[in-house]
Image (cartoon, rainbow, N blue to C red; front, side, top):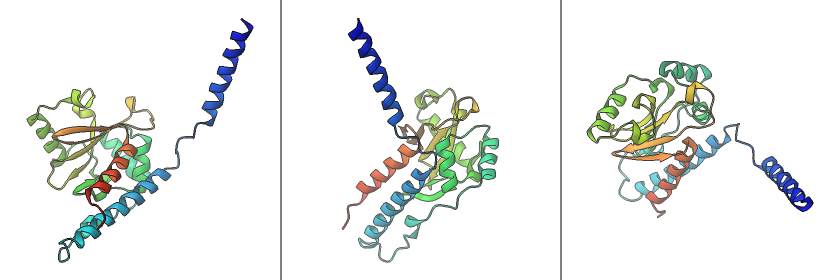
Length: 208
């Protein structure tokens, strides 16, 4: 019995030590700076490849468009009020670094706070297309399509980037992100989505 009690105590101490040694959450938003740098580098490589493989006489500067300047707290609060939703911390951090980014991945652009709204042509198109392919709220794992926040689309309005607000409009660290163009791809959070985008850019064009 004494051996069992000692073992339990040691296991509890080990668990506590492990918990204390876990790396803290990145509250600073430095991950956004890293993501922007990685995306910028890969897009530049993609641009250089295309310019040297038949695009010498084309204007491809859209491929290396820079992110917009950071959003202010008032910008973010205003978007939340329009939508009636609380953004997760990762999305807020991203907006504080890049208030939208044109053509950040191919022809997909991420919206600025001014574009985050319930009523838009892009959102109407999204809902129509989802209906045409029989996609419902259940396919996204949400209660209603009204829960989805449209945060980006491509230049033909066929691909969309979506997220949701925090449950009960309370604070939350992160929220799922979906990319849909007929099929739905789910990511655990915005950081995961952007990391995946960097990896996709790496495979799109091999260095000359």
